[in-house]
Image 1: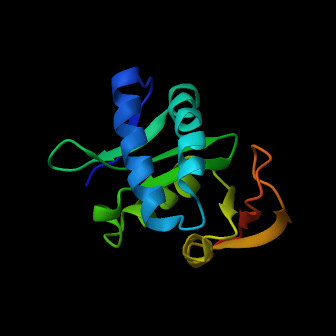
Image 2: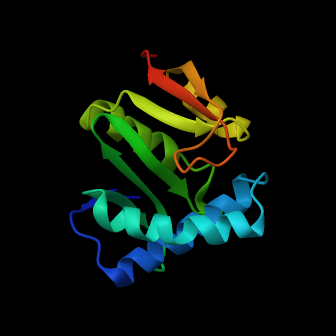
Length: 149
């Protein structure tokens, strides 16, 4: 599966990304309630249109298999549609982020230990913690930095 850079995300493609985000979050973020997903959805829609290039992989049906955004050396978002988990796509995205884009940091929801474990396996270590997420909600974040493999 090929990862391509989308320099400018239009509203229609943003909706495809949001659909992949929502499927991913529903499969992996069991600590979120329905009202949380409703709250975050428009923020994600806006972010994917503003963050700069979005690195995307499409499935054979044209649906978004996964996407990532990196800004200022930080993996700002990385989501895989659940149908594409366990196929090496997450590793491919992180390798691109670290080796190709110079990413060295990522924040991970503390309540998502599989994600933290994934990043640890990719060479990241926890260097800090915040009790609230970036929107001020009570979803603690682990601040991780790449230390190499």
